[in-house]
Every structure is written in structure tokens, then in C-alpha cells.
Length: 283
Image (cartoon, rainbow, N blue to C red; front, side, top):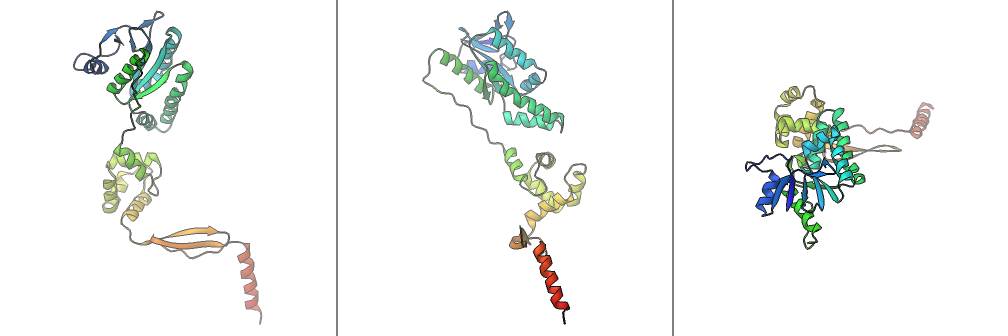
């Protein structure tokens, strides 16, 4: 039987927690009671034999508990007053959680993200293992795994779920390859405003002045808009320069926007020109 801490909020329409719904759906017996070890309440899930103790954290609660220090107080109690296997189950997408921390603002957002990322590194010295669950059902599966493993039923395996495909992540990768964009902050501004790459390109080609006005105050200006338009519509040729010790070598490609005169650098060229001028001056 799985025991759920009575303090866990019952947010399901059934009057149970969402993890409790998963237990019922899987036909697993469970009950709610206050989990107390050494006179202190700690942990969210265990079994009747107290073979393991799980602390469950959703993304928002995890971040806030790291910032106010509550997480470390909870884990310290697990470490000091409970002897057995200890695990923290993080429910949510870890990468998205870190990105959300960065988005708060340029200064505190970066500090918050670094603080939250470091929290994972502090778990193991406190004797707590880490498991990432995508949702409450996945968290329930991990709790059942711990219960069965503790009882010696080891002829099964639960794997970490594969990273889910996010369309927005792929859009970010593509946009960061565009010239004059290159930074995540600019990409987020564009996607928040125009939603899709197709819309961004459409505005850059058909409504560049309107787009420039809408993006006023950001670090995205006329140069970036023109680049997006040129890349997606231009049939002109683009040249590529390779600087060498003897000068600038221009090799042409299929998409060149302009041509520049070939320049020659270096002291050798200076003396060569001086020698040529002397020959020209002599009768």
C-alpha cells in the first residue's frame, strides 16, 4: 500500500490528488495520513514499511522553494529523521523551467536560473536522488517502481521518458541562425510578437516599416528586418571574403549582394609600390 501525506492538496475533480487518481486507475491501494518521522513532518509519499520517502515538487513550487530556502529545510529533515531511500520527484519540463527563470528579467532572471540549476547539484550530498517526471501519472509510476523494487520485485524496468518534441524549440533554433539575430532574447521577442517564422518573414518582406515601428524599443531594428527579407527573397549573388597575409581573396557564391574591390595589405606591397613609382619617375 502507498501512503500519501495528508497535506498534499486534493486538486482532482474526484476529490483526490492527481497522483491518487493514477493509483486508483492502476488498481493500487493507497491511503492518506500525515507522514511524521522523528516528530517532524517530512516527505510526500512512502509505503507501509517506510522503505522509501519521496518529496514531490511541481516546477513552480520547486523554483519558489529553492528561492525561499524551504526545499533545503524539507530535505534536511528527510536526511536527519528518516533512514531509507530518499528521492525528489520533479514534475515538469526542466529545460522549460530554467528558460522561464531566465525570462523574468536580464539581471535577477539570470541569477534565479543559476540558483535553481545549482539546486540539483546539492541533492546528492544530502543523500537525495533526483527523478524528472513529465506529469503526475509518470510520478505515480516512479513511486510504484520504488515500492516494488523495495519488495524485491525486480523483473521490470521504468525508464526516464524521452524529451518531448516542442515546435517552439525548433523555431528558436532556426531563428538563431539568421544574421543580426543570434541571441535568445531577440528570438523570444520575435516569437512572442509574431508567433511563427512564416509570419515574421511575411512582415519583413511586405510590411518592413510597420514591423520596425512595432519592434521599436527592442534591439531588433531595420538592419535585422532587411537581412530577413534579403535572405528569404534575394536572388542576387553574395561574395565571401577570405583574408590572407597577401590580401583579401574574393570568391563568389550563388547569392551575392554586392562586390567590393580587392584590397592588398602588408609592408611588402608598400615597398613594391615605392619601387614601381621610382621606375615611373626615372627618365
